Length: 197
Image 1 (tube, rainbow, N blue to C red):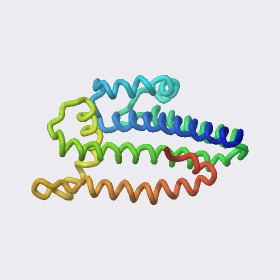
Image 2 (image 1 turned 180 degrees about the vertical axis):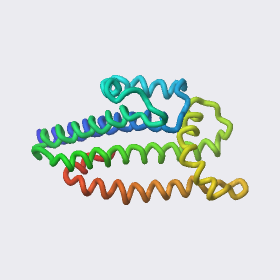
Image 3 (image 1 turned 120 degrees about the vertical axis):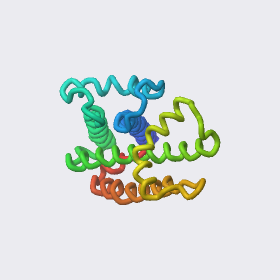
């Protein structure tokens, strides 16, 4: 019974850490897509993640161009530490450093793909029910997905009222998730068990 409670506790801790990684990657992607920084949702994401990111900003410096390296480094380090600690507490001993690094990378790739997956679903629903929505959340979703949608739309223009580009992006996300994240997760060994939400 005690070991079941312990493993449930570790599972909960891993889930909470993965949610925080999700928020860090959301911050990273909002910056990369040049989404509205003053949007209340952007501000909330920055506020929640800033305590963890601040130490990394001191030596990695402020954001250069589109890519916030401090946020990326924060996510990698938090995930790596969590993998090491959870596996130690669970009794697996010290995981190989290569496995921890690969597992951390897989977790970040997984979080990025999940953000785009959910954002696309929200965008599709909004396009049906409220195409002219001006809610801060709706605007942020549009700004977030536009950089990945625009190149696809150039190749596959809308057919009348039907935009096929989200279907292509969904297929791409599934392929990347299955091939890249799947391969990384397997390569990470025991650390791969802690990758996804």
